[in-house]
Length: 288
Ligand code: PMM
Image (cartoon, rainbow, N blue to C red; front, side, top):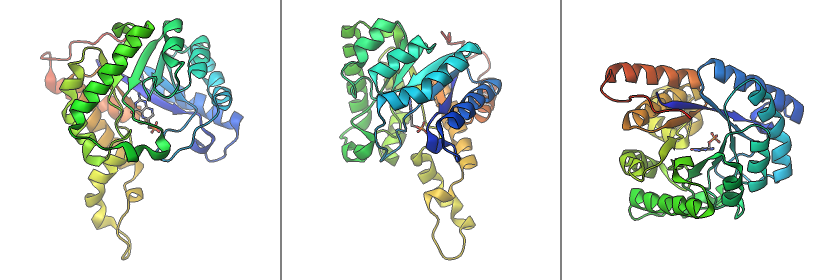
C-alpha cells in the first residue's frame, strides 16, 4: 500500500496565535491526529517553502522542529524532517527522524549530502532549481519531463558519490517548485519516466496552486457580486479533494508515497482506488 506522509508545519504563521510553544504543542497534537487518521509517516517542517517565502536561520528552524520530532518519535511515530539545512537534518535525525526530506535535493546546502550520508537516514531528493523567493524565474523548460528526469538523475548520482546508496534515496519531482501550472501536469503525466530512474518516488501535490488554478473555472458560479473569483476562492476543502484524486492517480502509477495535509481524505481515496484495482497491481510496496 502506498505510504501516506502527513504534513506537520511548525511555523508560527501556520497557527493563528503565533508563539513558539503554542506552535509546538499544536504541531504535536496535529501530528498525533494525522497518525490517528492513518498517516504512515509525519513530515515535520520549520521553514516555509511557499513561493516568495524568505529563508529562516537554521537555529530558529531547529528550535521549532526538534521538540516536536522528539515528542512524536517518543509516541512511536515514523518521522521525516523537511529541511534544506544540513545542520538541521543531522540534529533532527539525532532527535529521532529516520528520513531527511530536502526539497532542494542537496543543492541548497553544500553540506547536506555528506551530513545525510553520515546519519544513515533515508533521503528524499526533490527536484529544485533555486530558492522559493524567485522560483518562477527558473520555470523555463524545453521538455519539462526530460529535464526533470535528467536533473533528478544527476542528484541521485551526486548522492551516491557522497555515500548515499540509491536504495536509501526517494526521488520527488518537486511539484510546484520552479514549475508553473501546466508544467506540473506534464510532470505528473510523465511519472512513469521518473519511476524509470529506479529509486522509490514520492509525490506532493497537496493544496498546491496548480490544483486551484485547474479548479478556478468551477467556482465561477459561486462568485460574489461582480468581482471575478481568485485562487483564494478555491477552498481548502476543494483543494484537499483534488489532492486525494491526484494522490490516488499517482499511487496507481506506482509511486512509493504521497505527501498530504488531509490524511483522511487521501487514505479513503487510496482505499477506493485500490479496491478498483483488486489484486491486479499494487502488491504492497514495503514501507521501510
Ligand atoms: N512541498 C512542500 C514542502 N515540502 N517536500 C516534498 N518531498 N515534496 C513536496 O512536494 C513538498 C515538500 C511545499 O508545500 P507545503 O508548504 O504546503 O508543505
